Amino acid sequence: MDALDMKILQQLQNDAKAPMSVVAEKVGLSEPACYRRVRQLRNSGVIEREVAIVNPKNMGWPLSMLVMVTFERDHNAIVNQFLTRVNKQPEVLNSWVVTGDHDVVLHVLSTDTEAFDDFTHRVLHKDDSVKYFRTSVILKHSKAHGAIPPSL
Image (cartoon, rainbow, N blue to C red):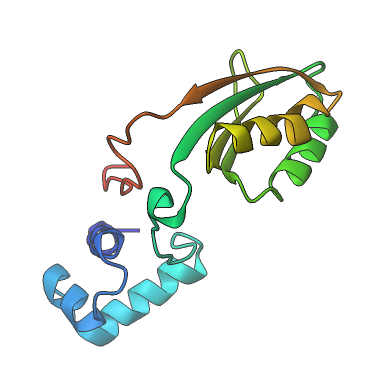
């Protein structure tokens, strides 16, 4: 990747639906050259996919929580089984395997506290491999869906 690829990525991260002619003009390339570079960025896996970013509150999910899960034993098979099961839950927006005091962090959406309580009983309390979990309610998104900076 070179500086032009980084400029293209900056443009696409700001507006993935921008016409290629506009992107090309902003980065100083011809439209065909810009298309080739974007195709290569997709083929190489730098651009994984293009999605619409939806506001969960406007979709009926007003509560957003981070759930930090710790297992009885730290074993890859246990973590993988848990993730396979939990990632099928519609409330789970993101999941990460992490280092530190916890093994997995879940970003969970909920319609209300009762629905979240149901989620914890259905998904977490019934799982014998879960030692404990901690929940933090996200009060405010100060930065969400940030673009990858060009210096990385």
